[in-house]
Structures are given as C-alpha cells and as structure tokens.
Length: 338
Image 1 (tube, rainbow, N blue to C red):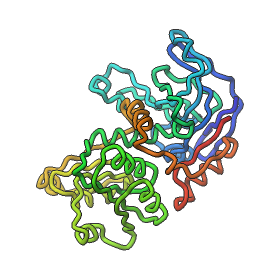
Image 2 (tube, rainbow, N blue to C red):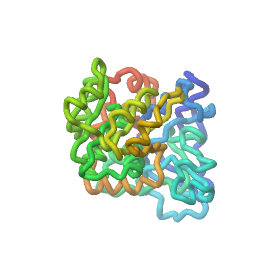
Image 3 (cartoon, rainbow, N blue to C red):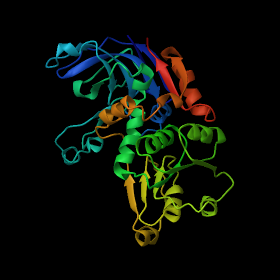
C-alpha cells in the first residue's frame, strides 16, 4: 500500500508499506477520502510541538472497514466509517469527567500515531463511527472538522438570544458559523477577518455581518453598529485577540479560545472580573462524532459550502501548498485515495 509520510520537517514521501493487520479491538479502514488541516501543514513544516517523525499524517478521514481484529464483530466489515482521531485511556481524571480530548496519555491519529493519509490504516474499533447511507462520502470526511465546532459550542451553550462574534474565517471559524446559525439559531453572528474572499465564505455559511478589520479598529466599528457580543470565538489565535475580546465583550459574555499560540499575550484582569466574563478553551473533540452525525442527518449544517478543492493523494504536495498559499479561495482541501 501507499502511505504519505513526513520523514522530517519539509521532507514528504509517498512510501510503499505493508498493509497493516488490525490488533485486538481494532478495525482496518480502507481510506477513501481525507481532509487537510492546518496541523498537517504544521507537522510537514516542523511547527507542531506534539509530532514525532517519521509520521503518516492525517486525522480527518473516511473509508470502509475491510478487516477486524480479535474481539470485534466481523459484521462490521463493509461499514462506511468516519474516524475520531482522539484515542484516550478512559481512566484518568479528564477521561472520568468526560474530557477524553485532554486525556493524560492522549494519542491523536496523525500526530502521535500514524494517521489516515494512507490507503489502509488501523484504528480502535470504538473510534470508527458508522455513517448512515444518506450521508455522502464528502460529508462524512468533514465530520471531524465540525466536531471542533461542536466541542466549542458545547462549552459555550449558545442560545437564540446570543450575539456571537468570530475572529477568523478559516475552516474552524466557518464550521463555528454553521453550528451557531444552523444548530443553535443564534440571532446574530459577526465574522471578522482580513481577507474579503474569506468573509464572503462566512456569509455563504450564514454570517449576518462580516467585517474586514485590516484598516479599522474593531471596537469602534462595533460601537457604530451598537453591538456588544455575548459570545466570542477566537478561531484566529493571534496573541493580541484575547485582550481585544475582553474589551469588546458584553458583561456576562463567554469567550472561547479555539487553538494554541506559543506566543505570550497580555491581558488585564479587571476587564474580566468587572464584567464577570467566562473564558473557555477547546481542544479537539470530546465524543462529538455522534453529535455531528446527528446534525448531518437533520441537515442543520452543510459541509459542501467549505469544500473548495480535491486532489488525488499522489498530488499531496500540491494540495498542501494550495492550502497554505491560496488563502483567498481555498478553504477545505480533500485527498482522494480510491
């Protein structure tokens, strides 16, 4: 079989490997589609602190079970599945309180363990979620990106009375727009970005107001519009954003940081406590695959609005470079393995 392997930073090869055999409690997935995420690019470029090399990247993937290991019902062979990349121990404190995404011994497919950019891969049986027949392959491979939004909104508990502001109209910002509007029916969603084409994608995904903040002070613009956000999602993760979010937030607002920057940021405590703000962070997903599958079945979200490019897996370098360089027109890039 062929596997996409990052040997070391900036060295990607398509390698011939033995087809893996599933261990006890595992299934083997014949991969059909996989999505490129920013973390895949970061591993390729040597900017992901969690990655070990060499590594088969890819944590967003869909395929068909073609073999099972000991202890797994053979009736699962032939199932169409989307794979949750979060592998947890199930017994540490975070796992015991329903937070397996920050398990003390967390393993993430495509980061700590070989992932889905391969013709075949093995995964724990419980991580392979059966996809209903009425959900297309392209929508199935997009489940993992939407679990990021499901995890974030699970912390924030949006209501129809909220006014939400999202920094960043990349894939994570856009999945959040769709969740807030399609699932939670939030009355107003504002998206802030510095690329007009991205803001157009946000409008397509349901944003009510878009703001290009390249040459304006966001605080002044919101005051002109008489907007005080009650929910703020930082899907851009620049160190300056958190303090601005604290400044512009309504009293009693919730702020969520969706990602991680290693650069320090400076914030003023008084702005948090004087408004009694709640600040959350969100990493990966905590058992949110069934949630997103339900969203898809009910047609509350539309992943097609985010898919802009498809490449054969043999064109993976071109695909990653498109993802990295074409920020105006590129949102979600899929690799085909059939």
